[in-house]
Image 1: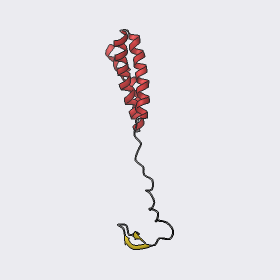
Image 2 (image 1 turned 135 degrees about the vertical axis):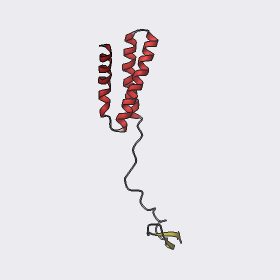
Image 3 (image 1 turned 120 degrees about the vertical axis):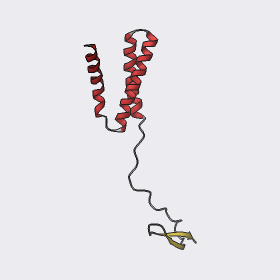
Image 4 (image 1 turned 90 degrees about the vertical axis):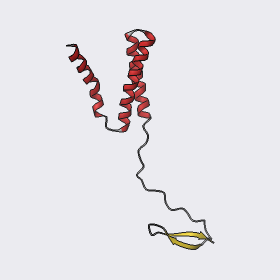
Length: 111
């Protein structure tokens, strides 16, 4: 009976993590697990009571989820690249033209 209860509680604890499909959610879930485990160990060791372990687990899980979610790096940028560089200003003319890799006409030197 104890084994069934432990497996049931472990399954209930892992069920909310099944829907984490973005990197931010995954990092928040991993941070909550790591923070909760660390908080439970430290709370139990520092107080010597089960209540201290529970409070440490709750505080560690909350902090771990917040830090894990906030530390997710931004995704790649798929927008347009920077535009062409501006010319040197009015009154200047191109002395030498060339064509870049994509066939665009580009001024190489100004006079």
